[in-house]
Image 1 (cartoon, rainbow, N blue to C red):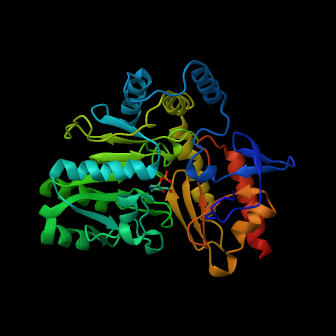
Image 2: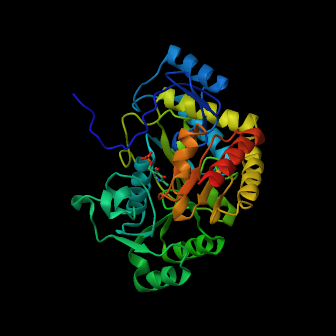
Image 3: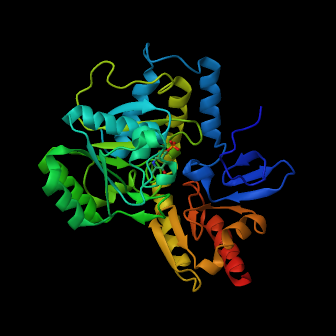
Amino acid sequence: MDLFNVYPINPINIVRAKGSSVWDAAGTEYLDLYGGHAVISIGHSHPHYVEALTAQLNKIGFYSNSVEIPLQKQLAHKLGEMSGKDDYALFLCNSGAEANENALKLASFHNGRKKIIAFTNSFHGRTSLAVATTDNPAIVAPVNQTENVVFLPFNDEEALTGAFQNFGDEIAAVIIEGIQGVGGIREASIAFLRLIRSLCDQYGTVFIADAVQCGYGRTGDFYSQDYAGVDADIYSMAKGMGNGFPIGAISISPKFKASFGMLGTTFGGNHLACAAAIAVLNVIKEEDLLTNTQSVGDYLLTELKKFDRVKEVRGRGLMIGIVLPEELVSVKRDLLVKNRIFTGEAKPNIIRILPALNITRDIADTFLTALDERLKAV
Ligand SMILES: Cc1ncc(COP(=O)(O)O)c(C=O)c1O
């Protein structure tokens, strides 16, 4: 059997990893500023994480949601405390798409409505509702197409207000990334997030903050939407949550009532996934990674803005987009091939930096020096 060929891959076989370094089968070291796509939040093979998962696996890895799993309550308690949302409730699942799928369903169950507002350049995942709210026709199958989703221009207050004036009492939810990742590291403005909050309150609509990529400390706030000073009704999260162990979740405001069978999953919230997520939160707290994210992130943003050949630098914390002119699109590939540095991309000319939240200034400097070299070489 062959693999279903859907990923344009780099011909590199990573066999070992530690902190922000990874090694291929030939022993060549690479610097990982991509974090396996914003997933590696506390660094590869963090000792506390390895120990917690190993110990858990030696006890029990999985049992279904038909029994008590105290680790779920421990995780909910810690997450409530660290995200500042003690009174919210936790539903655990396995991925970002699944988290958004459940958030959108829950909104519709809650107010009995069908319409969803999403925004241009959004990415919310590949399951049916998540992909229907994703602004990329190339990945929306005919069966996923629905008139229930209305796309509005990102950060356009007038368009949003107009939509609510026209059909506000039909809108189940508004879903928005605090910083659009796939869409090119574009930040929702504070005024826009506040407007969403007030319109949702006025019309009984659910505010869903997709924090799958921009959440879990990536911007220095627990959820990137926090900087607007408003609470969403549901936060979806996944990527950094398990440092590579598949886990997703939604954090649900107390206004929602749960009932048996309303949401569910076989694997979500299993022992091993909870142990991974708890270990990640422990490390974020004990190593004060939100502060580190903010300070190394600020440093990178400041230094990157000094490069003449960089068109624009966007983002917050350790979610950074470096916009290059068309003639420099080869820089990302050169960083990998010549300097052995993994970065991400959003559109061919935007380099995305999504490293572990514990990267040091030295690592940031290594990257800045390499980028300088590459920019001068083209
Ligand atoms: C903002 C956002 N939402 C949802 C998803 C989907 O997550 P997953 O790939 O875990 O389904 C992603 C993945 O890139 C994302 O960036």
